[in-house]
Length: 487
Image (cartoon, rainbow, N blue to C red; front, side, top):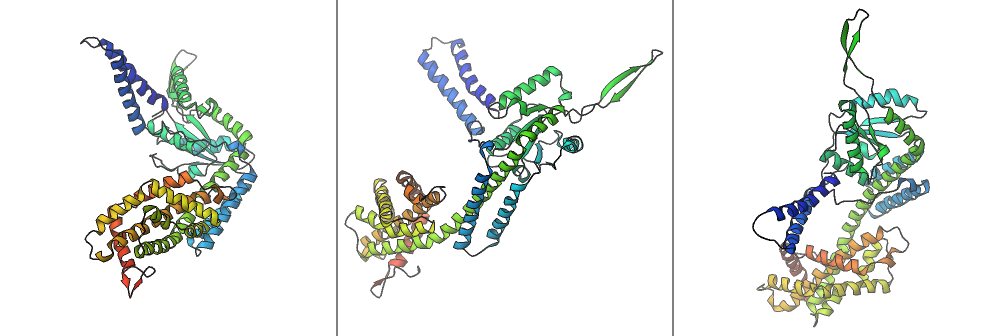
């Protein structure tokens, strides 16, 4: 739904309440009652709008293509290459890492590309397949450089849609419609805007409307999209005008009628295309190369995060069983000591090195202290201990029940702390700054701890974790089995 339509729903509901309030019989109504009712209905309408038309409130920040330079693209390419090298260092080469290297080489060649890529996009029946041959025969031969124009595959936008590949790799999108915007078309345009695509909007089949109707429709389109698409990029064309009946009179006064097919009217489009190509062609190609680099970089970073997470789990598990076994053998007199024991500065440093974060001992101790404080202030020690006490109540391993609860709880909190560190270190490693380990965020870390704890407080997980802990802590020949696999 276009933004203007959503706003009309919101304000229209409030106005309707105002009118009905004073027209309805039944006595005098106070203004405060009216104001309350009006606000309820208006806010309800707004909630419905945000629920069912989420695009209205979503305003993604746009990227200024004019600020992208060759050095910026080259730096991004170098960063992506470094990430691929890190991935290969951490894990054995895989088909995916090989594919990343091939994609990087392909993107690097785009810096020398001179051929702009255009894609025609729109709903079925709007005239895409008619427009493309016309551009290929009438406009492209006038250019002194190669150019491609393709039609995108059918696309139905959803809340989680990605644009078709042909659109993602295009330098310029020609978006075709034949009337006012539909909800589906508006959502597609939102996706194009959110992904910073350069767009020309083509109002096709203009010959089917009267001049006044054409003007009204074009003005409505300009109003709907004025915050994003300038008026000069909204163009009226007629790729395949309807045949018109023509009456020709003869010298003897007789006449004949015949159908004539007017020539396609692409004047406004070809004129604007020429302007865009002259002023923006090189920058459009550069910007598209930059976007492809960012996409590849995100894919590599995602895979790198996955591999690091897999490598971090054994480290976290090692520390969780060590701290848990210690608490089991020597229960702590206070909860403060339990929380402090759950987080080791060595674990901070070991996990940090996995993410290329070089924490000093003092920095690691500060991070560990912050984690312990967060765990205490959030009441996680009490929550964890109470939940695990209920699960372990009546267990045959009762002769060390107090130590068992503390051991399992300490191991549980160590796991929560470790996974919280992994999530925060992942964010730090992605910062394009020097010494990211000096920029760790205590408040952010506290938020992550609360979230991770909630995720690991489900009853099924706690049951499995408690059983696994019992197997780890069960005395064997007088020694704690803190390092052997769970039985």
